[in-house]
Length: 322
Length: 120
Image (cartoon, one colour):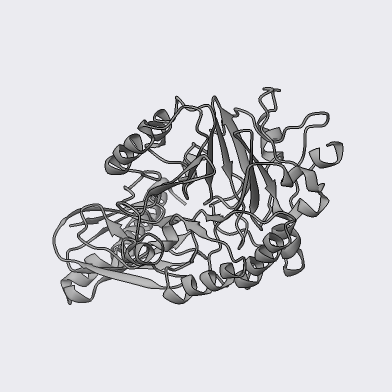
């Protein structure tokens, strides 16, 4: 396991006192997606860009593996990435090269850049290359101008409300939430009363030993409210999950990898397959980071994670960014 | 220069300054005297913020927002009196304010972005 540990994204329950600077250092660009492996009811996530360095045992073990891709922003064509189709295809190549094929894919939103039909078509076509079922939740870029009607028509026919749903795979309960609709002036992401009620009912009859994976576009934890990187009523949603021993929350939106553990819940955000965004507060705005063309692939394609030497953990500390 | 001379100079400077302010005052107000319907005002969107975040215009003024970010934004009034489509880079949205009042608005994609139009 010594070889695999250095590229493994694990959760650190050690509370080893990494300060804010240390926390920020631990964030990474991956740009390709994350392979998630459920093992013994605990989810581990690995950056696809570094899988070639991993030993086969690391990813072939668990009961269930799936891939999270996020923020493909099809239609975006400005610096630093005029070819977002190309970088999404690169992610698909990495998925197809996995030694053990994932069961399915999750896309955590911002499939398109401007909600145009041809943008969704292109993503669908590229992701078809994996031959796997894809579960989607919308990002704010997917519900422009039509309150999400097109998104639901394409991806949410069996979903409730504005597109939320749940399903079970190999004993794991997955909950896809929508927090990009009906946003209020000055506010953050919103789940809304109707969705929260549905969720409470959805998990009520599950055994507390059931592993839970919640996925939604905007982070369900307060990453950086100044830039809108949080969800106003996420605490209520998480309260419904208190009885469960293993809860994993997967989000996108912020185009960078961050992780955090809070009690029984581990939070992950995924990198974008399209373009990077700045670290919280490190720029005037959360707009796309522009990098020289020759550096783009290296930024999108390589995970640059600082591990805490001598520990298995990375970037998982209860740091406040406020 | 005598002290009286200095005071005259200061007075003259102030008057000229006042005259400049009157001449270059808000376009909308100046236009009211003549053709009220042609007055206009501009709001630029840069770095996920509206600039200026608050403007005051005369009734009849058309306000035009221009998105200069690489990311789409919208302009939506708090009371839904006006609502733009998503504006991509360099796209514009205009709305003519006919009734006096205070109109708070925000970007429905990035609701931390807020602004205000005061119509007199």
